[in-house]
Image 1 (cartoon, rainbow, N blue to C red):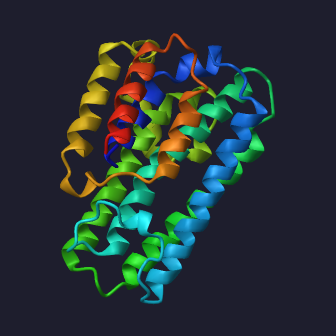
Image 2: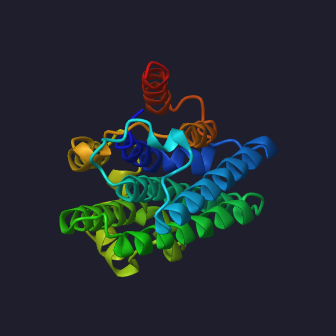
Length: 255
């Protein structure tokens, strides 16, 4: 599974958001625990690697180097990974918060919000390290900033309707921009995950991310496990989600 594919996961989750919110099973204690532990482990790994890079030390975990181009600065690869994964974490937080409010529950909110805050911390750390890292060329810095802008805009676009319906605007990168995205969209056209509107959004995500050379590196096993936990919460009749997961996870198993 390539890093760019995670943006497609984010779009599919947003498209199927209503199904998850209204008909998704209540997350089990095992799911909640796995989500927290996997994200905690990944957070600790990222922060350790960023601290090492900040100190000029080579990354110690060889798994983080799998598939990285030899001429690509390690801090750039790590920053790209963190920014792309933030799309998933932020959208998943919105989905879980919306589900809790829809069903008048308060079971998973503390966990997903805690993970969200951790993601904000590691994002801030990654961008700070990038600004101070002399191994990055001006082009590298521009690339990272463009990716940051793209992930922020797409996240606000994908989540704006749920943020509006369940008053979750605090999870927007830019509330005004997210509200503008909402005004530009027909809410009724977004009710079905098979609508033309969602098909166009998915096509736009693929055009924006899947062909970027720097996003073709394999994802870490932690990322794949977190995606599996997320997808396990969707109803079994979410056919498109199941098909996508089976195809991508099969690709991951074969390298």
